[in-house]
Image (cartoon, rainbow, N blue to C red):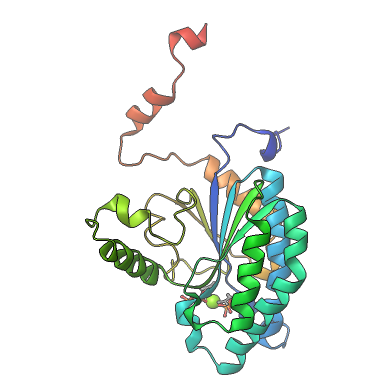
Length: 251
Ligand code: IPE
Ligand code: IPE
Ligand code: MG
């Protein structure tokens, strides 16, 4: 019988998983419910997924909760999503804190209401010293916004524009780049998520609508990840030579 993923070697388990949580609207539409009902169900799926990541030994989970472009949706959906964020902050943070989750909210906070901003800041401060899992809830986030804001900081500090200087000012500078990118809902696009950081992520697309996502879908994504060969621009032979045990280790 196959070993459970969580007990396999850490090389096979991605350190950082990034997810575009897509399909909430379609999930609601199929049930003749308002789109916001799908988003509410999406919060449940996120709670399940955080638990599954903790069980699998994943260190960082970054999820796309609201994009810079989502402001252009109908006003009632946008206000429903803002309400839901405030509600989720009040209901979910203590449970996440108890599980040892450190929460961050990468994104442009300038357009958020004081109530939401205060909730984000409190959650971040409360969980700052937790070490089991870093959870990045990307909210009012856009990959292009991120690159521009990082470049502006580098410029303001009079530093040269280098890859290293830019990377150090991106909204996810506190974690290494994602190893595995998952998008639910069947669309095969990035939609302005972590465009800089995903240069070498492995991509996995799931037909599941986000509210239906859970431990078994995560397990399928992790299994697919284990079958990939990450080459980072090198050849397969170079990769195999670097990972093959030396004669000493073989003995
Ligand atoms: C993703 O689900 C959540 C947000 C964008 C906030 P959608 O709302 O995009 O769901 P679909 O893609 O319309 O089904
Ligand atoms: C990406 O999904 C944003 C989030 C999941 C928050 P969208 O539903 O906004 O992406 P598009 O419009 O289908 O590309
Ligand atoms: Mg969508």
